[in-house]
Structures are given as structure tokens and as C-alpha cells.
Image 1 (cartoon, rainbow, N blue to C red):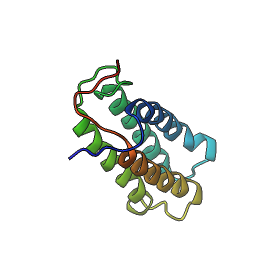
Image 2 (cartoon, rainbow, N blue to C red; image 1 turned 60 degrees about the horizontal axis):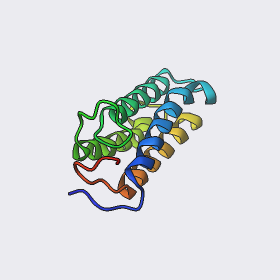
Image 3 (cartoon, helix red, strand yellow; image 1 turned 135 degrees about the horizontal axis):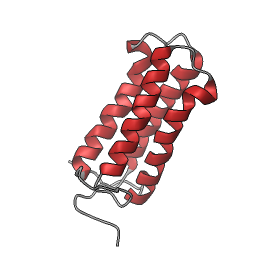
Image 4 (cartoon, helix red, strand yellow; image 1 turned 135 degrees about the vertical axis):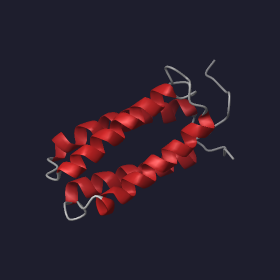
Length: 123
């Protein structure tokens, strides 16, 4: 199920923390007006940080989420981010729509491009 991509798990983990922090800060940096956009961005950011910190990747702190589950959760969050502006009715507001779709596409590309090997930890 897990593919061998070009991005090392360490890089994936570091970028995941950066994306999580970005999603939490985005409503304040870009002045999101829709409260739904603010909530979705903050919740997605917190979830991204929690998944990254709980994952069995080299950057994981708790290492309780297996990499296979991590992979699936990353895909689900990315797809949810892409769909969020349309599902929650803020597609007419450009900044949050661009942030959500951009983060979702970036998340998909990062996840697809990462080398996920079950049980492999940093030396």
C-alpha cells in the first residue's frame, strides 16, 4: 500500500509541522472574514500538528500512529481542505479559498511524494 517516494520521512515531518503552524496562523495573516474559514483552518492546523507529533515517523514525539494510518489521515485532511471552501460556504472569499486549496494540493503532493516505510525509524 505504501509507496516509495522521493521525499524522506524526516523532511515530510518537518514540513508537516510547518504546514500545521501555517494553517493555524493563516486566518490572522490573511484576514479571513468567514468564521467557518477561520475554524476550518485552525482545526486543520491543530489536527496536522497532532497527527505529525503522534506519528511513527522520525519527527514523531509519541509515535503511536502507524505510518500507514498517517498516510491515510494526510490524504483525508488534504482532500477535506480542498473541499472545505465549497462545503462550508466561503468559496467566494479569495484568501481562505486559496489557502485551503493550496494547502490541500501541497499536502497531497507531499504525501504522495514521501517514502513511507512501516516501522523504519531514524538512526
